[in-house]
Image 1 (tube, rainbow, N blue to C red):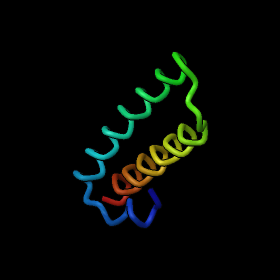
Image 2: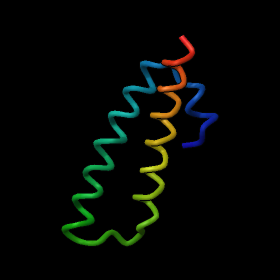
Image 3: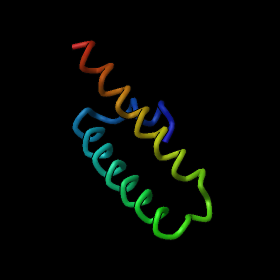
Length: 64
């Protein structure tokens, strides 16, 4: 997910999406430890998406 797409979301939608992505990341990490995922870059992309979302939420919090 790109930063422009993240900025278009409302704060509530962004928080909900973040919770979903964190759960997905946790699940993917667990599955990777059990049996390696074919494409390791998926984990990296998901982690970066989560960081972008957290950054945007923090920026909105500071701008209030």
